[in-house]
Amino acid sequence: MHAHSMGYLFLLNAKLGASQPSLALIDVVRRFIHNCDSRQIRLVPDRFANMCRRCSDYSIQLRRAELAIGLLQQGIGRLRPNEHTLTPLHMLLAKHCLLSKCYHEARAVLDRDVTDVANTGLVPVDILLYFYYGGMVYIGLKDFRRATLFLSQCMTTPATHLNAIFVEAFKKFVLASLIAEGRLISLSKQLNPIIYKGLQIACKPYLEIATAFSSYDPDHLHAVVTAHGALLQADKNLGLCKQAIQALYQCIVTRLTHTYLTLSISDIAAHAKLPSPKHAEDLLLDMTAKGLIRARIDQTNGMASFSEDTEDFSTPATADRLDERVRGVLLMNRRLRAMDEDVTCHPSYIKRTMEGGRRPDDFPDTHRMRV
Image (cartoon, rainbow, N blue to C red; front, side, top):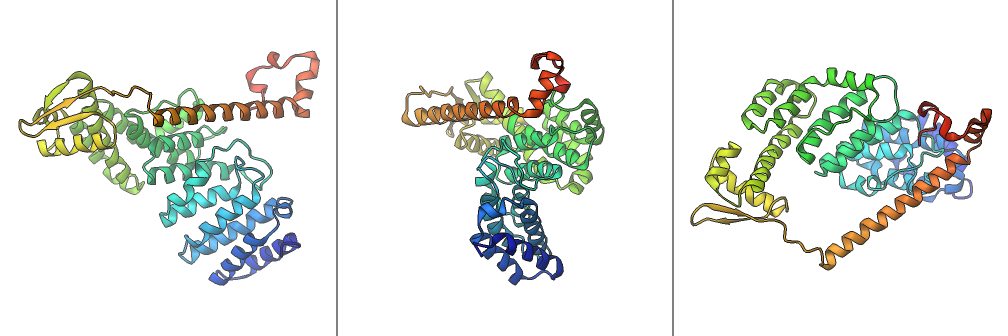
C-alpha cells in the first residue's frame, strides 16, 4: 500500500463513489491514510481531498460523525507540506468536531495560524467554512477572543457579494465580541462597503442587541432579547445570547471596580440590577476566580473591597509568558519576510512591476497582490 499509494487512492475513490455508506469502508480509508506515502498523495491532492470528503459524508449519514475525526487529523498531516498550510481537511475536521461536540479534538489544528494555501485541493468555500466552523469550535471551548478572530477572518475574506456564510458568521461575531470585549468590534474599515451594508441590513436584530448592550442596562437588553427570542432560537444563537447577557453583568461590575474601592454587595446588586445580593456575591466570586477582578468579600458586614493588580512582573511565570510572546513575534516576523520574498520574486509580480519602467510603489492599491 505504501509503495503504490497513488493507485490505491484512485481505487478507493472509485469504490467510495459506487458503494453505500458502511463502517467497514470507513475503516479501510482510515488504514489507507495511516499507511500511505505522503509524497505520492501530494501529487494528487484533489483526489485525496475528494476521498476524505466522501468518507466524511458517509460518517455523517451513519450518524457517527466522531468516526472521521481521527482519519481527518491524520489526513491533514499527510496532505500539508508544513504545519502552517491550510487544506480542505481542516474545514472537515472542524465540522466533525462540531457535530460530535468534541471541540477539544480540533484545538491543536486550529491553534496553528495558517499562512499558506498551497496546492492541496482547496476551493474558496473551504476557506470560508474553515474560519466559520473554527469560530464555532472556539465558542464551544469558551475561547471567545479566538472565536472573534476566526469569524472576522471569515467575513474579511476577499469577496464582492454578500453570502450566507458571511451573514451567519456576523451574527455569531456580534455576540462573541460582546462577550470577549464588552463591545461590538467594528469591521467597517476591513469589509467591502457593499458587504458591510448588506450585513447591517441582514443582521439588524443582532445590531439592536449590541446597541442595547452598550447602554449597560440589563433590563433594556433583556427586553430586546425577548423581542427577538424567536429569531435567536431559529438561528440557534439563544444560548450564546444568554452568555452575552451574563457578560453585561460582568462589565457593569468591572466598571464599578474602576470607580469604588469599597462597596456593599447590596449596592452592587442594585447597580447591576441583579435579583438579590446573593447573586451579586456569586458573580464577584466567579469573576475573582477567573482573574477578571481582584476583590475581597467581608461577609460580616456585606462589603466588597476592590484592589488593583499587584503583579510586579518579576515572577518566573511572567518571564515565561513574556519569552513566549517574544518568540511568537519573532516567528511571525520570519514568516512575513518569507511571504514577502515569495511575492516579490514571483514572475507575474516582477512582470507587472517592470511594465512601463514603473516601480511597485507606483501601482495603485487595487493592482497590488494581496497576501
